[in-house]
Amino acid sequence: MLKEYIRLPDYTATIDAIITPFRQQVALTNTAAAIAVQSQFQASKIIDSSAMVRKLITPITVDITPITTALTTSANLARVAAQWKAPVMPVAAFIPTFNLPRLIVPMPKIEFPNALAEILRTFDWEAFERRIRTPRNWPKNWETYLPQLMTMLNDEGIPVAWVPNGETLMELIDAGTAECRSELLVERRVEILEDCAAVLGDIQSELLIPMMPSVEDLIASCRDGHWKTAGLAAVPLIHSVVEALRWPTQQARTKKHHAITTRVTLKDLMEQATRAPLVTFYKDWNPLSGQPRPTYLARHVMSHKFGPEQVTDRNCIVAVMLLTSLFVTVDQLDLAAQESAA
Image (cartoon, rainbow, N blue to C red; front, top):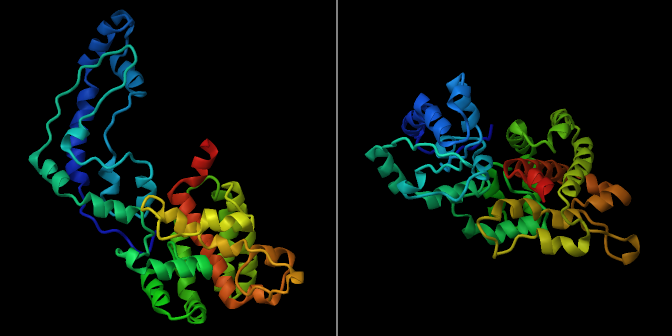
């Protein structure tokens, strides 16, 4: 379960009271009779009318925005919201429409209580959308802190989507320098680790599920004090997911595709905030370049030109945070399924 929740009124009972009678009316026996008369089916062949109704109704699509689950407190609100159509404000938009090839089904009468209409009119849809499209640990007025967030994400490679918790994130934002932020990460790494373990507890992506036993071992290694082992293990897992999503890994392309900018839209915010640390993660380094060996977390350097600078306490907690941030966003936004469908 996520450490921080979205506290919203629970409208489940009200909406269920509306939807349940509708479902019951659709399943009435006279619906089966109407279908039989107005289609090519012969009434004499309908032996079990209720079974026939169920068979016919199964493929029916009802255009009712499924807000029931998401209006309650949910640890997976972003994942639910990602499957929606755009939020519908007018009550009229909740009137169902049926797509029935070659069949005509009488529409049941549906009456919406005034209370539901009032809820839909007064609900703050804009604030709701902002919350579900923003990493759970970010402040509501995240735009105010976007310059500091961009510095951490793009330049320092510090993941801040989903972890650390909101309080620690604000301390990182307020820290004056990269050195101060690195010290804070090491100082708070045990707390940050538990933040990571909490948000990784409900991964459902088919791409990620086979990796979860290794992730659990990685978390256990950290708890046992083996941070370097965990850091080394996190890097190939991160790279495997990035390659599965076919995101760019060549240094020449990473900034263009992964960096977060002031032009980021609310729609893209969560994914872009997750991708941004990949700019430094995929930086290359050549010993013949004359440039100093990188001290930030860099996959190419760790894999091919390893040095002790790559497994500092700071880089190891960053690796675990990056893995966590990536896994949760891929899961919440169902990015693996989108890539498979592309």
